[in-house]
Length: 113
Image 1 (cartoon, rainbow, N blue to C red):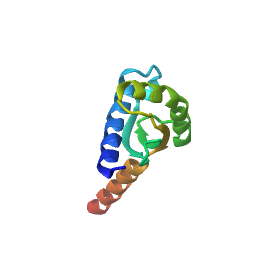
Image 2: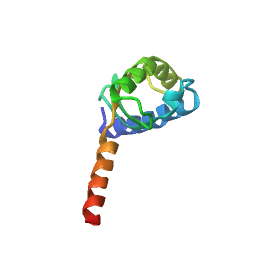
Image 3: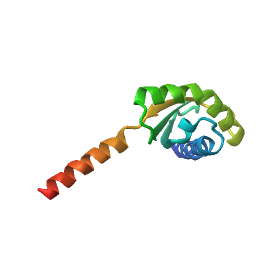
Image 4: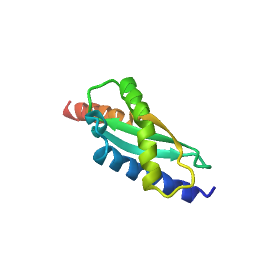
């Protein structure tokens, strides 16, 4: 498959999943989740969806909650996107934001000294 199409589908999936969580999810925990990115397999059969949350819940519990909601999200995704096959979704907690905040804090401490 064309790499450009793969990136376009991943970008659209990121946008649509964000809208689904914000507008259609009933669970308040899902409304605190932000989708940071998506990687789609070349045959569009599988997608890794990266997310972060402002919730104080542990990363493992958040991933478990997202996996439980994945069938609902996949169903809504199939209705909103015009794809022949809707990919299976695997939710992965994105630690890059927390890592960036940690580096930012360290740099700020260094500049204060």
